[in-house]
Image 1 (tube, rainbow, N blue to C red):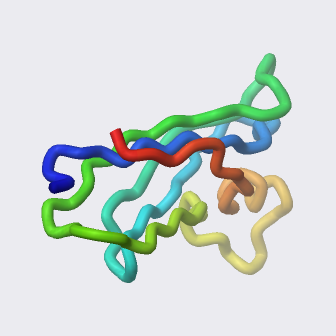
Image 2: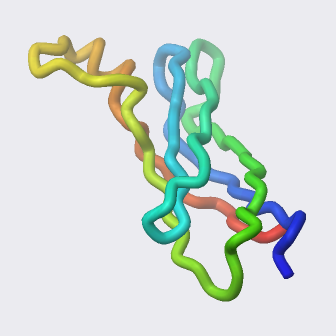
Length: 102
């Protein structure tokens, strides 16, 4: 049984020049189970940063499942947005470093 288990996710992303919010949507199949939120960037930050998240596994999940994680924009990006606004709001590129059951 997976009751009480958690999904641990560690990801890496290029450090934004300015401190900004970052959002990721986690889904199992077609069902969204979490919006992961954090901040990254700013002065004195390495070129790449890592973020870790721990998410409870839904009680209804059993057996194998397709899990997806995608970066989300912070909010709607208007068509006439400046490059600075886009950099602040766009989804961030990332790579998975580790995914495991805990």
